[in-house]
Image 1 (cartoon, rainbow, N blue to C red):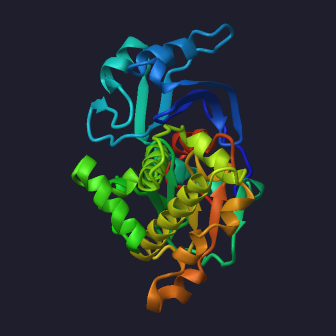
Image 2 (cartoon, rainbow, N blue to C red):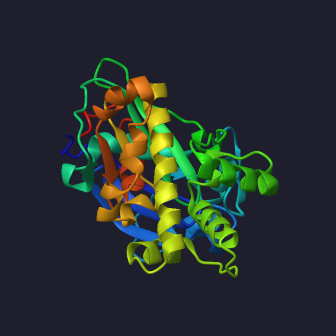
Amino acid sequence: MFTGTLEQTVRVVGDIGGTHIRFALSRGTDEISHVWVRRTADYNGLEAPLREFLSQEGMPVVRTAVIGIANPVTGDRIAMTNANWSFSIEDTRRALSLDQLVLLNDFSVLALSLPHLPKEELKLIGKGQAVHGAAIGLLGPGTGLGVSGLIPTGDGKWVALEGEGGHTSFSPCDETETWLWEEARKVYGHVSTERFLSGAGLQFIHQCLTRKAGLGQETLSPPEITARALEHSCPHSMRTLDIFCSILGTAAANLALILGARGGIYLGGGIIPKLGDYFERSPFHARFHDKGRFGDYLAAIPVYVITSPYPGLVGAAAHSLNPAEGDEPA
């Protein structure tokens, strides 16, 4: 596990999700300070919040920023999928007088954090033993569904995958999920895995269950659904969370098989770390192992929940120092 600080000129590191913006100053993966958090919905682009952050009293002159964003980064223009943001990277860089402004997919950045997170910020779920030098999978539901991974290069370095796995087509595994898929298809047409594995997905599952039960429509927020489920105060919320975790188990198993992720599956995002002890006894693991002839293969893979407060900032700091290097994750 990496524990040392690699000295570097101070720079901004950032993590922009569909719900929150997080900026900080960094000189290394274990030297992150001045953490600044705001709501994504309060802005419509990167320049205004980054200018606010840099304009705080006592801030040093910063010339470089490395930022993860919950969106594909395929060119200069960014138009976020799950937020009303649209901006030019180069225009923003010039407006803020930065020498370098690097934007990366947020889950690629989160993947880069894995070799640098302390073991106490990774909760092992179930059993399993990581295979040294094997690929690692990462996924996590929040405002959307992020998916990435780390591929070893064989010389102590890693390549972080940059993709949009959350938008792959959802495949139901039982009658309830088939029914939910049919309901979602009426609304969305194409049904991606993110339509269920996200905050909005929790709401959709809950609304479908309550409507099927003939109850009046009650629009609950994702935190309200999870709170009622964990308190055992609402059977439909409890059922919603069980279905959600089952679908996540299948998605995690699919990712593990595609990548050959015998180095472990890591779960991030804003939802799972808040589920506490429930997640360990949820249907997640039963579904994660439910792959027929490859059940034993998956049972040997460790699954970790990332409990770090700001892992995206750690990943951005890792990229700014040396994007490809790092020790074996826990």
